[in-house]
Length: 361
Image 1 (spheres, rainbow, N blue to C red):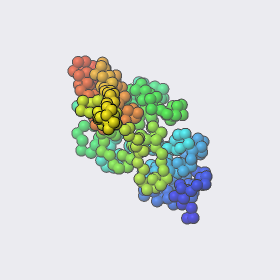
Image 2: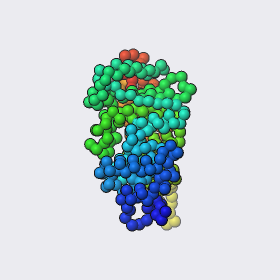
Image 3: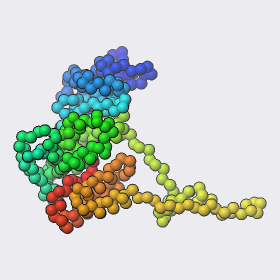
Image 4: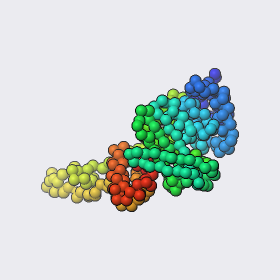
């Protein structure tokens, strides 16, 4: 092949349109596919998805082909039965896994099974969390999304005695969408709220499921797309080496033993007599207390009077702008569970309304 995908990624001249680039990179797409997917079928599906969404033509075609190759690497057909999607964001195409694609990856791993459900007005529905979780759902035939009331997901790791359950009322789903949506009314939930709600609940369950490398990468891709920071690269997609772009770490000021911060340069300058006999006094150190980003979240959780309010307060800790690390998130989880136990002990009827394992996004 005279033109390969690496040339298309790196050359200076304006890239070709997506159909031409897909044709030129057919061999690379074929090599990326697992055995159960046919390269001709994958190419046709990608072209159909591209033509179905005119906004993809406004994206850099290299980002579109990167998303196609990434989907191929994971063995998820694009825009077929809700497995995966090509979604334009500004001038970049992003690969978005659907809830069915996530379910397929879990089941394919052999480490467990997951499934989701949507509860509509009129359905018989009951659930409980805690140490004996269960979901009982008997649909009554309503499937209009305007009557959607709950979305839930259930995971059962292989060999586990109890399932992992997440149940979200639609009010919470909409609040979550509005908080993290970066494309306004073009967000896919406005056309298919059920699909979005199922996926939101499923993403919480996956946090507690065994993770195959493919599933872990798919979850990371989805989270990066949520913040508009996926930035798929053709070479990385081919090599399978894509990793999330880490946000630059904020330079931390020097601290002393009592938790105060100060200007290190001023701190190191000693009082001294100069050679001419004059005296130079060390500049006065300006002190300020370090701000703990967890304090307002913990305070809100401790003040929560219901399980729903408590879960919403915990979810605030997942705001990407806070930049909390795993240790800080575990601390929030500990406080969350402690507060939940207090709610259950004080008002048992409120425990039945508890809606999740820590309210994480």
